[in-house]
Image (tube, rainbow, N blue to C red; front, top):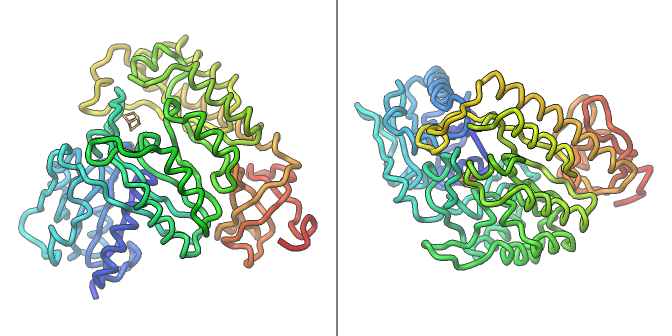
Length: 439
Ligand code: SF4
């Protein structure tokens, strides 16, 4: 039995795809092992957004060859699509597969026999037209279910459309099938994943279905406690979806909404499809209906043309907004994007300073959000995340809690009352048995 190991860089989508590819191997009789367990084959799933993607890729290949010098090494993923030739020249790489090829490893690489030269099987990204269903089963608690891939938006800083192609989706019927499969396992939470999931519904180049209808349909699937919408563009987060989530028992009150900048000047330069007023309106709609909802924000600092004044517009906008945490990205130049041609390059030192300011703001926001929810009762899904006698889990509105370790609670949901914020920044709960006799 040949042994295969996987290494994944990047986002939830990559994790869902690696997991599905690993099941393809297992179905064909391969044994899935850890990276250190002398695999015969390594599959490395790369990311184009990761800083120093090339260096990381080289390092992982080197490590793999150290562990199993005679192993077969195949590189897939976004970076493989963007730079197939460069990657094929890395010592130790046997094959590079692009976006249209990565789900066809067995068909294209046969019995993974090593050849003199590395194989490069990466067609133009325009060839990546079909949707490949994927979901992760890495831990028992939650799964990332891919419902959409690619993007038609073309933001000035982004390489994802070049690495993943045009927007395309699974059908509602097929997502429901996967959800039912997942429901028959022990998994309690499904995170809907994609590049631009609000754009769900394009099949073979034509809009056929709507994201809102997918949400309504999934809400009916029995056997899954929670659905989480991973990240959705503000212009696609409609009142219909927000109102539905506010009434749903299963879709949790947690929204992650990319903002990228709080300055309309920069939003226009980025080619984003909304202005800050729309963003503000989305946050206010959510908070009016669900005052306890968690709202996460993606923001980029140091985009070309971001002067001190424009950065302060972003800072003040976020400071005044009722949001719960930030994911801060420091802008970095990417080949073949419109942004690299733009004037007004922000020195790296400034980018880093701005990033630090927003990270501090994020901590303040998170703490305030946690404080507002102390004394309230929520449902926690406990994970196998044990540290110093404590176990951890997330509430439906994404508050990380710590409770006394109880093995019976792993992968179980339980109602708890939030007590206080501990030194590690997690929320301690009133001892469950003191609050509820039985759940
Ligand atoms: S919406 Fe913009 S940032 Fe997001 S994937 Fe599409 S092009 Fe990239």
